[in-house]
Each structure stands twice: as C-alpha cells, then as structure tokens.
Image (cartoon, rainbow, N blue to C red; front, side, top):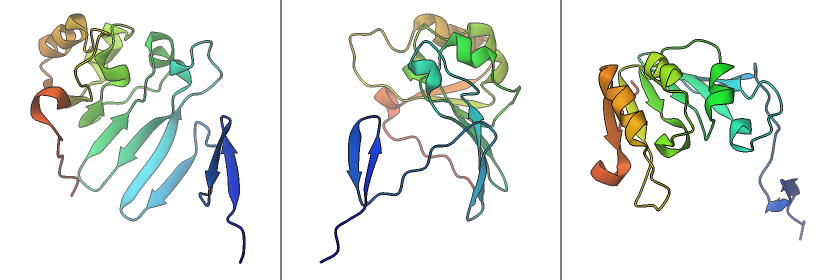
Amino acid sequence: MEQPQRSRVAGVVIVGVPVARLRSGVTRRLGTFTIEVVGPGRRFQSANDGSLVLWVRTAHRTLLLAGDIEAVAQRELPAVLPDVMLVPHHGSATSDLDWLARTAGQLAVISVGENTYGHPSPAVLEALRVAGVQVQLTRDVGDVVVPLN
C-alpha cells in the first residue's frame, strides 16, 4: 500500500493534504470565484499581522476575509471596499478604527463566541455603527449566510 503524502506547516504534519505557501499578489480561480491574496505583504512582529488576508470576488459580491490582522497590517493593505467583511481578530480592540470604518463596506460579520478577551470591542462596534455598516455577530445570530450569486 502506498504511504500518504506528508506535509509540514508550522510544525504540524498534515497527512495527504497538499500545502502551498501563498504570498500577497497571488490570484487563483475556484469555479466562479476569484481569490486574491492581499496580505501579508511582509513579515510582521505580531503573528496576528501575518494572517492571510483574502479578497474574494464573485459575479455579484466582494468579500474581504481579514484573518486576525491588527492595526499595523491593516494600514498596509490596499484600499478596498467589499460588500462583506469578516472583521479581523473577532472584533478585537487591536484594530485601526479609521481603517475599519473606511473598509467595512455594507455588512461586517464578526465571528465570535462567549470569551474572556472582551471581543468584540465596544469601540469596534461603535466605529462600525457610526459608519452605517450592518453588523452581525455569530454569537448572537449563529451562522451568517451571505448569498454570493
């Protein structure tokens, strides 16, 4: 019997899963989706700022999936205005509030459950509210379904 392929990512062995290192500027098509890596553009001191940031385009929607990036990495992203943003780092207080208000688009989804970290930050929620962004927290509404077609 043939042995499964082994890959190592950040010290974790993944059996049978192909692994590719992606960099800012890489674009891939997946069916009707275009997925572009827009960050990180460099190494950061904070591991959170090194999160993969994806700009996703469909025929009818754009999405910004911003991982756990914090203020430093947020300021280095290209200017985009998505229809939907997955708010970085569970709405943590480590966000640049001006960037968040400028970039959030129409719908901001905050993936968060009960926690002891204070996520989401009241300042983040207020910045989004003042910017006129609709906010949905998974803690309150469960799964957030966004039609992409």
